[in-house]
Length: 257
Image (cartoon, rainbow, N blue to C red):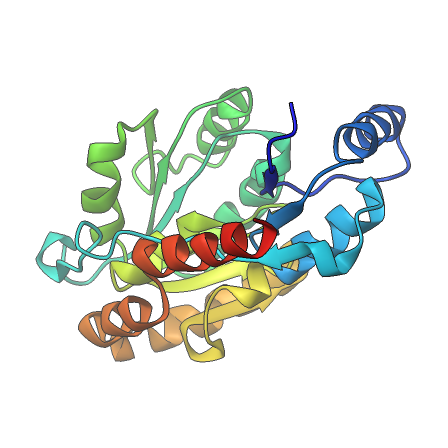
């Protein structure tokens, strides 16, 4: 129709399996005449350029953001006092690394009896978590909340000292941003665009394997008392806002007109 068109991408795809090959061919065909693309991370930009054969100069990097006025710290929700709460909120699927979570939780609880896991989300991997909890008799240490309305995510995050993300692939990961805005120290796999999200003093990164993640969790546990929730929130507030995203997006549209 002759309309200027900008495509926004926020997913990472592989190249080798049959499904990805067909998706990438379809994407390449659809983006043949695109005016510009927006990627949510530099890793996402590289992935899109390779799989869709889009010239890199046509791809703008504009990170996602978080509403820091809604995701605010409230340490008073952390209880009891002597417990270290580790929160994980995600869709309970293979891509989100639930199999890793199942291997990590029993070992951390064995080493640190005062650790309590709070897991929000639902999906096909929920039975695996329930089986793990029953197998190791740790139902009192692992709280499975199931599907959470978005209105309850902030209060659930505020119950935690540490946020754990075990994703196997992520273009950006807003969940980490929401957790940091609520004042949680983050531990995550270093996949995709995740290393671009937070400063090094706010997140511990590890390969998507149980042993390295456990090691980073142990460091976070040893430092959880040093967490300054308000300071972390203010840092996120300075780095991210949807107003900045809107301004950058407007500049992309101005460039293609």
